[in-house]
Amino acid sequence: MPNGKPAIAFIGFGEAGQAIAAGLREQAGIATMAAWDILFAQSRGDALKRAAGAVGVRRADSAADAVRGADIIIAAVTAASSVDAARSVKAHLAGAPYVLDINSVSPGRKQETAKLIGEAGRYVDVAVLAPIHPARHATPMLLAGPHAQAIAPTLAALGMRVSIAGPETGAAAAIKMVRSVMIKGIEALTLECFLAASRAGVVDEVAASMKNNYPGLDWAKIVPYNLERMANHGERRAAEMEEVADTLRELGVEPLMTQATVKRQREMGQLGTQQSVRGVLDKDRAAMLGAISAAARDRH
Image (tube, rainbow, N blue to C red):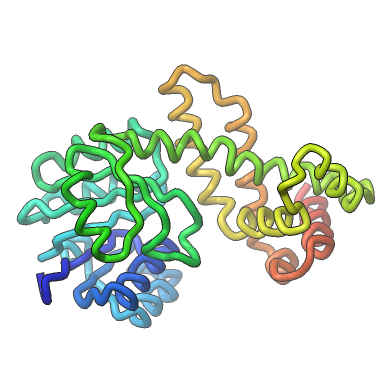
């Protein structure tokens, strides 16, 4: 470990990987970091490569190149790619590095990945419990699995806010997945409720009436925040909610509401790619709802 600090590799260098890397570089002084993302080999990965350069992260030529010499590997890919990401690095792990799986997938998927990694690495189930910005690497995270207790002091020394969910792989994922029923479900309900309110011309009245039931919530802020999150991340959130649905099925709960949330999140993610919507994401609630309503009408 250079200067007593771990060498870190990122498999997947999207929003989460970039934010964690930037925090570790600027605040924890981590000097040795590498990243690989499958988009690096494509033109649409140019922004990711520029982000790596800006943070001072070495752009690896492959997953194998990224993990070479790493003490800690952070897997931050899409939910659907989590097992493939683990498979891409297993044969190249040396010295049993810690593998922190921060992907939003079901407990069963985490257990499958841990089994795949086996003795080649020390797998840790990690659940990120809040938006990665603005806290970046200091965003609250839960750790679980047989190696969680061992890695926790090292991560804490880097300024990461971690706590232990339990010794069983999947314990952290279970908390993340189950809470997402509510968190991302409320986002989807926000879209459905206030899109209808906008078309009925009663947005202010509906928002004001909610204070009777939820006096502690400021809907003037909640509505645009939730819409912006869905517009920017709806496709990814939909994939995560499919993992939530799998989690509920594993627990014997039929995911009726969760399946509907998948549809609303995906719809909003698709609308969010349209310039008419993207151009108002920093505007007020009325402008956002107007653009979303028009885009939704055009889409149907």
